[in-house]
Length: 628
Image (cartoon, rainbow, N blue to C red; front, side, top):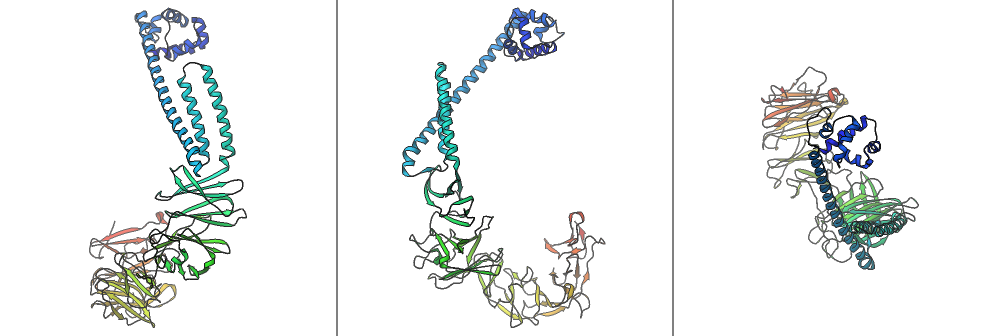
């Protein structure tokens, strides 16, 4: 017999008869708890009650035993009741075994936690505290106390099966101690604000504790077992509210806050030194030289450090910080102050090595430069722009990314691999802002740059990866917009001579067939051979010596024309791929796997279909195009 089915059957009959469990029990001379057990499948009526139960609900005993109205097949009542009782008994035994197992697990877990917490607290009180260590968070002390009491009482209650009075006394004592412990936790622990942070590589731990009432704030160091640390330095100023921290390196953390007078304050936590010397040295002196961000960095931050001051140049604006306006932290960080307010922080990076004789940073070391503010600040990596030889007497170190260049103090440096830096002959002082993505070449086959001197334009190029250079004076001094070589000998230049209103430019396309030694004008602009024009954003692409393209974007950026040449750039015809006025901004084609790909967008005034574009492909060098 299914006890669960029987229980639901009795419950449904009782509810249908609008009877409570108590009322049904009274009719059957049993308790309401007995009825509850039947309905939950945890018990079964005695054989003597089956007939009475059937009479109560106006059904037969067979229907009761089958737990189904209308099912009156003969049932051995005694056997059915016996089976049901046995099933209930087995279920009780199973649940009892499960309960015993759960109690055993709880007892084991409780005693383990109790012992561990007790050992931890004894270790703190007997060993760590006498040696000056504290918990990293004052709340831990009270939490450990709470765990000791709770787990101890739980184990005691489960272990003692009798002696209820002992259990009650234990619970009362635990509750009293717990209330006292929580009161101390609220009064003491909650008044201390804790800041815990780890460096990116988890090698160092920042711990700060702030008294919320008086603002007294202290840095903790010498972490042990993650849970303990020693009080180190007390902040000079009381903290008013929030504290901002920022890891500059894995062993330097910048801490910024507002004091009680709402002035910006700063502290730098340092956890080590740098290679080269174990003695104390001045960070100010170690920084002597010139530093700046790389060419593609935002802000173009520069530092010039001499024996008297540090000059900070950002976005063309310079600030001077005298030696006595700089405060050193450890031997790896320096804070620059302006009228007693911290302005910038400088950190020596891990790659810095200090020269033992001069205490200068050796060649290759970098520094981190960062604003000091309660707002989000960005770390900048600065590189020494002047090389330092083994004796640190000369400066001239430059860092350049692979296939890129940098102009510093009129000298152009570039690199093929990001490691070896090559200096290009010529004075590039007047041309730093004249370069774009199309008017120089860095490749193993051909490397080409240009510079302006005495109002004359010079082209400088190398065919052997910078080992030797050739310099050629161009016939005109216009602005070079594009330079392209399709092989070592044949190359083209798009040069602008003059500008007019509306972005119109006057210029020409030049060609060389001897590697760049001599140049011949082959085109004077789109239109008439003598009075053609380009536009200020025009770019040039030669697919081979015969096939060429020129873009003609309008100054508004709303549309752009594309022109195509099959005679080596002498004559051009306009490319029209769609009559739609929507897609009217033609970009310069790109070459990939021997095919040409062209994108036609909507320009600045396009918002159709989310401002999308059309793309085309040509397999015959631009004669025909297929939309893709």
